[in-house]
Image 1 (cartoon, rainbow, N blue to C red):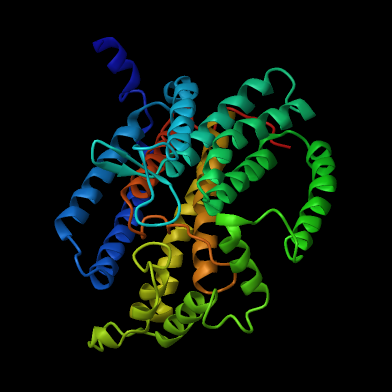
Image 2: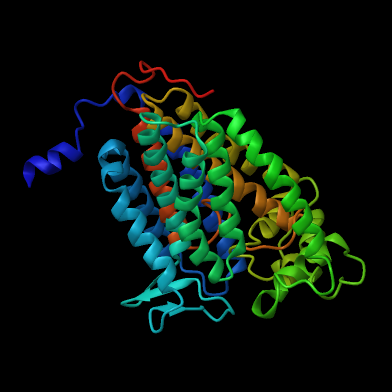
Length: 390
């Protein structure tokens, strides 16, 4: 047992000069900003709970940063199966819970409530990286590789779709697309697939706007209503666009420097916006800190994304490169979608803003990703291995 632990935590052989402390500092600053905003939007905000969450998150980073990601990838099949089963179990009573919403996206195990879809994102990244690495030794540039990668992705995504969690499903699918683009599968394969998929997507986009469409019915009708309201906002000011319209007004009222020093929190426009602690946390953040504060936060988030792709560029091997690309893609897509929704650039869909939105599952999942990223960066002989990604 002792030998196994020593094998996992091979501390001495790491290149500690490559340990990116600045990345941890950026993450810590974002969590501190999050704590401040949450204290303003939540009536029953618990500073102690928030501090414990941040400390636990930093501990998770420390642990995963010293676990060799090659060893972690050996257990990827188990991680993938367990997270997929957890996503499926959200529909089962009494494990599944809807948290007073219409969607069963959470599990309640022994009083501990968490959202499996957040863990599925990381599990899919690891699974795809391991899969592409194995296929690289056989026949990477083939349609068989493409379809198997889609199957790996769609199995947990299907269970997440059943939860009516369309936003998380889109994130996972986009992660697949970006990892495929960097896998070296070949432009002939991707070009052929795009030639088929893009027209089909165009047709589906037209079809869902038809009166008798059958894709969004029953409990999914609200998703279609949000898309149609976004396409044709006129007449939906008090309906599907009410949330986003108030969000835009709140963001605009922050002006250049925000209202932080003005006092009178009761007069804030974000009081008319729901879920400001999670999906719409960008709204109170913008009103309180203004354009300057938003620019600072976007800069911090951009630093994380850039560091992900720099880690991919300098990774020791092909698998490390793909994992870093997957993690960077996950952060980029969620940030783009979250801010896009709050500013009405995209249809209303629920996604947390990494390191800022409330939610321990999201926070801990993101901390795991940062820890893995740091481990990729401190591997010995980093960048000595060459690989073709074209």
